[in-house]
Image 1: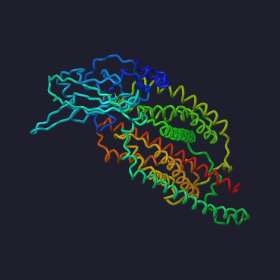
Image 2: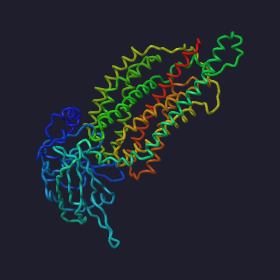
Image 3: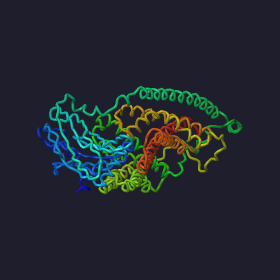
Image 4: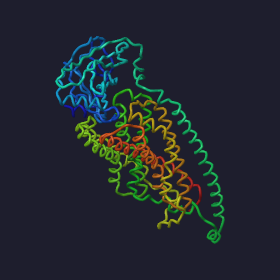
Length: 584
C-alpha cells in the first residue's frame, strides 16, 4: 500500500480540493479530527541525519485509525516520514492533561534515550502542515553526577481564525530521570485560542527577517549590481574600441593587393575565420551539456518565479514537487537545443545523443542519491529512499522525460539543424601558434569563474544556511536578482575571455567559453568545504557523505547552467563579429 500511495502522490495532489474538511484544504468544522503527525528525529547539529520518530522507544496514543493519510513523492524523496501520533485532537475542543501511554524502561531503551539526550536530539511534528519542534530531554549535573532526563508532557496551544488553524505552539515539561525499570507516563493537553492572525500570514512566525534582510544582504545585492554595471560598461568600452580599430585595419586590408597583405602585419581574431566555426571536439557530449544547460536554466528561473508567486516554502514538499514537474515538462527544450546543435555540428548518431542528453542529469542525481541511500539504509535513517519512490522516479524518466526529449530532438534537428555559420570552414585545421602562458585555455578557464562567483558569494551563504541549518529561505526576490546578475556577469566574462583567445589565434572557443563559465561551480564547491568546516558543527559519515554528495550535484548543475549561458552569449558575440567583417 505504501508504494501505491507514493506512485499516486501527484494524482492525489490534484484531487486535494475535492477532499473533505481536513489539513488538505485547511478548513475544519467544530469537533473535526485534527491529526498530529510525528515526523522525524535526529541530532541538532546534523540536520539531514534524521530517523523515524518512533525509532526511539516512544509510545503511541490510543487512537489507531484516522480518516485520511497522505505522503507525496517529494516528501518521500526528502525523507519526511509521517507517522500518526495516536493522539485524539478535535477542532476547538480543549483537552486537559491526559495520559496517553506508558513506557517501562529496560536497559536497551534507557541507552537509546540517553544517547538521544547526549546528542541533543530534537523531533519534528506537524499539525495542519505547520511544523512543530521539541527536544527529547536534557542532562543535568549535580555534585559532579550527571543525570539524563526526558520531557514527558506535551502542551499544544493552537490558535484558530474562523475555520482555519493559524498558529501552533508546543511546550514540553515534566522531566523524568532515565532509570532502568522506571515507569514513564507520557501526557498531553490541548488548548484552543482564538487568534487574529490571518491564514495567509500564519507562516510568518517561522521566518527570520533579521537574518535574510540584514544590511549585509542588501549591501551584497547592491555590490553585485554595481559590479554588473561596471563590467558591462568596461566590456562594451574595451570591445567596441578594440573592434573599431580592428574593423578599420581589416577594411584597410581589403584595399591592399595580395603582395601588400602578405607583407603586412596580420594578426588577431580575423586570421582564424576559417576555423572558428569548426565543430567542437566531442560534439555529442558538448551538445548534450548545452541541451541540459538550457533545461536547467529554464527550470531554475521557473521555480524561482513560482516560489515568488505561490510562496512554495509554506507547503511541505511543494518546492521539490514543482521542480520535478517543471523539469519533466521542459524536457523538449533540452532535446531541441541539444539536438539542433548536434545536427549543426554534423552529428549523425542522434539517437545516442538524445539518450545522453535526456538521462545525463537524472543519472547523475539518481547515482548520487542511490550511493547516499546505501549509507542511509545502514544507519536506518529516514533519508533512505523507499522502493516505491525509486520506481516512481524511474517511470517519470522513462515515460515522461524520454518521450518529450525525443520530440524536442526531432524538432531541433529539423527546424534548427541546418549549418548556418557566417564563414566557411577550411578543410585543413589551422595550426595554433604559441602564445603566452596566461592566454592558454586552461588558465582562461580557471580565471573565468572568479567574477561570477564573486557576484553570488554572499547569496551562497544564505542559501547554504537555509538548507543546512535551521533557516527557512523565503527571499526569492533576492534570489531572482542574483540569478539575473549571475547570468549577465557570466556572459560578459566569457565574451572577454573568448575575445582574448581568438586574438591569440586560438579557435577552440566553444569548450573554452563553456568551461570558463562553468568554473564558477568549482569555486562554489571549494566554498562548501569552508562552510562545512568553519560554519557548521556537522559530524559523522552519513552527514558528511550527504553534504558533499549533494553539494557536488548542486555545483555540477550550477556549472552546466553557467557554462551554457556563457556559451550562448559567446556564440552570439562570435557570430556577430565574423558576420560583420567581409572575410571570404
